Length: 482
Image (tube, helix red, strand yellow):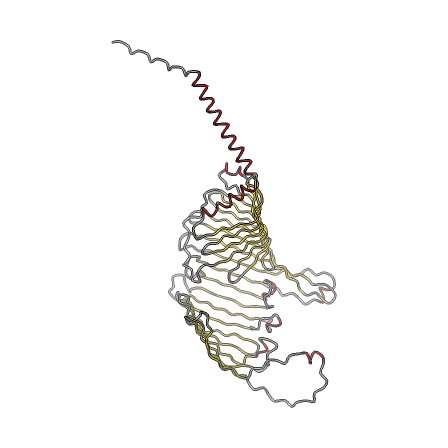
């Protein structure tokens, strides 16, 4: 049997063809390097950053808007925006004096190149419907790439109701592909300064752990021999649980304690003693439930609202609050019980809270809030309250019974004759219909004395407002007539 002939070796590439292939590769490399050089040169110009930011609206939904102004900087290292405005059907975010810095080598590690964000002011305004759809738990909070971002914001403002402002936010946010991490080095809120950290899993069960510590410093009047002192309160907050699935629950614990001010000099012996404020709260939250507060217990002692929040009245609150269903599997209505006493009550115009005591009970059956009884003490009088509210329809109805209520306890410019009577109000489609029937008690007759010379303060003082009787009914319209 004859052997098969051996395969012939491949024909050598002609020298001219090899030369042409080398020239083509050299030309392609030269073209690529030229393009990179031109792109690098272009990235160092302001036009590159302006062009890139102008492309953002192309990737947003049609009902979102994106506006920028006063752009400075380059794509190489970072830039500054004098203003940025992003709006959606639910939110409006406005940013002033925004500085961005990035490191493009982070892309080699699968991270977003943005490395630092600082802003002079960020304002967030909710503009969704008054009755938004119920919140639903997320399926995943994973991001397409890792993030390691340093944050600094001079003023962060929430323009919702109620409005709130925080200052000097400084921290670091990271996403490592599995968890979100937030380290907050500083946040000034109201009269307190806080630090904290939080970790949240990106996938089910989305375990959350967060802790915040802070201190509240409030000036106290000094003694007659020295300057004012500082009252310092220490606050701690912890939040842990899960966010995935409708059955998710979170445990919230909060604690507030004041520390005695350090005595300095003779003023410490003449100044009044500082109140020892303390408060404790434990609550179970169901973030996706119709009634998110499952259980809560709170106690307060000598709490001064003015020391904790600017513009609040001076108080000294003592009492307790209990809220929740009797048992998690019980069909009984959700119940709230509140007992509160204010040992530093006073009229509004003296930066005090007129309320001296409050006892209230409220029920929620899953569709309607009811307040079968509540009693508020104001001075030597009291107010009895009853009412109910249906969130789904906005229906609201309530009545108040006044018993010997002294008007001067509300405002010092009002006359001293106590008021009694009742007020009834009901929410309707176009407004609130109300009725009021109030009468003042007769003041005892006094024998007028011979008037003497009036002082300058008496001549300038306005006479107190006086109310003998009030009968009124009407409607406060909240919507225009069709």
